[in-house]
Length: 541
Image 1: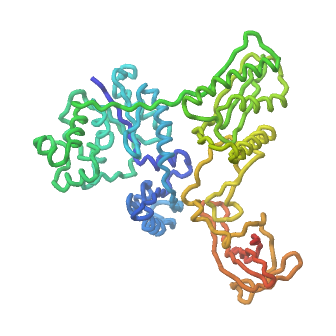
Image 2: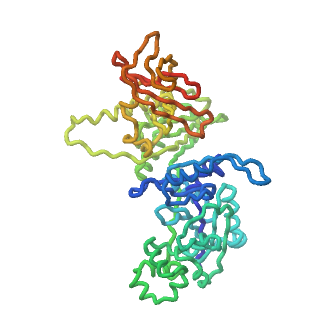
Image 3: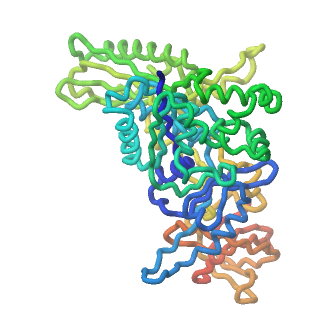
């Protein structure tokens, strides 16, 4: 008889975020998403935010108001002053949640060779086929306890259930104890389940399925709401009704879900397996110091790696070549690419550039190559006429790759925008090679960035201190001195107040003005509110 272990991670988006940033533990975290119809809505929240009446589905503005009302320190009777807890609002990252769950699935292969993700649009559970494996751990209860303990060491709160079918295990992992029962039939997940829990159902006991709520069938939300309006809260109520009438009223998917839950219809687990590392190696029969032999073997290894990349539809962005020398530390050569590449001749040419700069410490006895970073390979349609200007991107890529591999990838960089209100910190430099280009976040899309009339193209770093004359103490500038020259302000626009986030150790509060002088020059000035000092930030050209 098959046995399935369901591992559910309550409030997985928040758990994933706290796991990657442990300093956020205990904070009032709100994850929101952009709804096409209702705007920004709360997707998930932490236990601290739930205590302040924040709920998934409410508008983000309402959650911000609720949390803003309770950010002051409080003192309870007989206790010390509590530390101020500030809220954190973060846009949900569904892709990163799925990637982290895939990494967890790979890690869970220590309990079963067959691990799959829950087949949902946004999965938060893993399904493990543990048929015949319980004896290796001392029984099914010991297996479930070992999984709970291992996940706890990873900083995860999990709910585990072992049953005959995937549907039963999935349902009991969520609603196996009364504290997890959905409120009023809505299935609202409370994020305050700080304790892990496991449950093992005896084989062949189908009667226990009647106690599960209707949400355990994983039906469309509209069907579940219809069943609730009819007063049906438990699966046992459905099993007492004629199946023909159920199919006529709610459709065949309801009957199929009931059969999968009971095990009369098979529900296979779609296994997830991590890709095999893209690597190749060659061991010399006799260690050698001849560069020609090393280059020839390296070319053969790159040919093997290229064929495997083509099969997977991938191109390499970063490649690590390791020369294992006798009685010496391995010599490492890293290749960085501007765009995904599979051509072994091009990779070998870049490797030769670096081999010419190093001295072999001893004879080489083994060569290893490994694709560190890959990306989907770009395919371009051929040109009908040969005079089309398609060679320029290839020439640019070749130039960038040669410079990066000659000077170092950290010295050939590009500017990347950051979600930072302080202007001089709103960018960073990233290497042009070795990394897949990710699309900008919605917060930094071109439509939301200030235009050239609001932000200057030329900035001073650091901002230049200036002397300003103004009519009112807190009014706009009327005249300022810069580089021993007096500039009279003809027109002024502002102020625009910019403040840094609370998570910064040193806050910055500024009032910015766009001014036009009598000479026709346009400048960007700001007043620092902490000490009322004035600075020149940029020039409009």
